[in-house]
Amino acid sequence: MNSKNHVNRINRREFAKQTALAGAAVAFSGPSPVSSSDTAGPLCIFSKNLQWLDYGRAAETAAAMGFNGLDLTVRKNGHVLPENVERDLPKAVAAAQKAGLRVALITTEIDAAENPIHRRVLETAAGLGIGCYRMGWLQYDHSFSIRDNLKRFRVRLAALAELNEKTGILGAYQNHSGANLGSPVWDIAGLLHEIHSPWLGCQYDIRHAMVEGANAWPLGLELVAPYINSLDLKDYLWVKKGGRWQAASVAMGQGMVDFNDFFTRLKNLNVKKDVPLCIHYEYDLGGAEKGSRRITVSPEAVLVAMKKDLDYIKAVLGAR
Image (cartoon, rainbow, N blue to C red):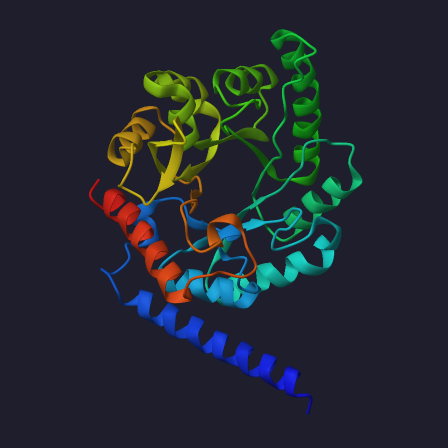
């Protein structure tokens, strides 16, 4: 036997063993998870943060931590590559189902109805019973006015809404910070109001809304509330680096987001109770936060941190 292959095989076996042990450890490291009825919509982990694991181990690990849903990356450098979607997405969904998880949504780079690969992704996902997908971001073109940009966005989004209806899957546009459509929230809310399609909505991200909206973010939330079909949960703090203030992601409950207040606002605005809630991990987890295939810290350290955040959200929801 080739000694190098033998070493790699041992390393893979040892890694699998360590991951399984870490998963078992986190499963019993905290209070019993609340039931799905207590949390309404599925509590999903963003699979970007588990890309250091294959489909089966990612699903088993997520279930061991107490998640009941999965937001699966189907994009460049994701868990599933778009060009291989017909072959690989069924495998990923089967692995999730075997672990007792529901693939509630997928995260994609879909931004144009005429793209044939985008169509294949939606048709495959819908055929597997996946109900929602996160779209790719649209960038403002500063050679046009804001109003002209919005007109151009409207055409693209309306075409995607039609494609969503044909394929039978909901589209969700995330309000991501930066010079993107959706960053100020009012822009995507206005377009969704104009297009008025049940097949197109917003994946509302409280962290990005607060970063861009400061004290005004509740106004944007109220405006976009009727169109929210999924939620991203994460926390942040303002920190000074190199003489400049910037938003830095932190563990749940350690930052600026008051999740109890946020969930109260969602309830008062009659946001649907059954929308997927997706936990994103964007603080330092040895590369897991960046979707790395290899992590530089122990699997146990990553999973303990992840479960701590999940338990925090469950505690907030369970106390309501």
